[in-house]
Image 1 (cartoon, rainbow, N blue to C red):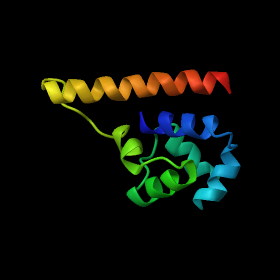
Image 2 (cartoon, rainbow, N blue to C red):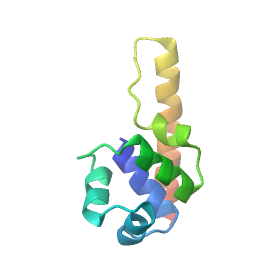
Image 3 (tube, rainbow, N blue to C red):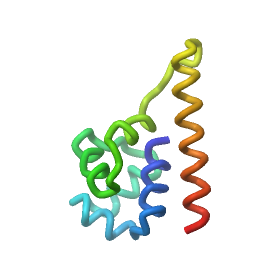
Length: 95
């Protein structure tokens, strides 16, 4: 889910993959692997994403966490994450 969320952030902010890769100081192929959930971004890379997109690091980390659906807290966090994810999908479609 983190990869798809990062791809949506990129599209919402109007970056081409190559442009964002340059901003993050990574290769376009590595960016593609992250966006396709083939590789997990490092904490340091998530910090760079947060600066480029001007979003709190905790917001990005929310998409990479696994929550226990058997607890009220886990269900609530998943609901918040899914709501944010759906909102981002709508924003991306409008771009």
